[in-house]
Image (tube, one colour):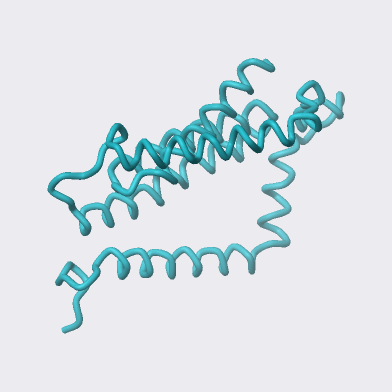
Amino acid sequence: MFYVMCIFMVGLVLGLVVVASNPSPYFGALGLVVVSGMGCGLLMGHGASFLSLVLFLIYLGGMLVVFAYSAALAAEPYPETLGSRSVLFNVVGYAGVILLGLVVFSSNWFGGLWLTSDEGFEFSLVRGDLGGVALMYSFGGGMLVLSGGVLLLTLFVVLEVCRGMSRGSLRAV
């Protein structure tokens, strides 16, 4: 299980490097799918299967729809690929920063102490992630409404930024 979790972490970091280094929205969407899948795999490895499912549905169901729509608004005739020179320079720079951080912080790494949320309670009736979801809905209703408003505001900001100076689908009448 330790090796599977390490593969998920390496995939998560590589997906984040793809998202951060690529100026083209098409390959950024590919990086978001990889990051979402690897992050959900990490959460499932720690025992939060319900939270992992919710995260995967939110990322792929909601945010990628907004991302695809904004990519259609900012369509480029010749997008830069993952193998182009400027993107490769960014990938090497980000990988260098990650390796430097790995060297600096590797002495405090305790990978053998990974526990899932259910390992401490042998006779528990409620799983750790389901109890957290129940608490979120019972005590965090206002935060859920606020989060929905922030996501709606983010949608309008992304669409306005992608519109630029051209006349896109959002134009003042």
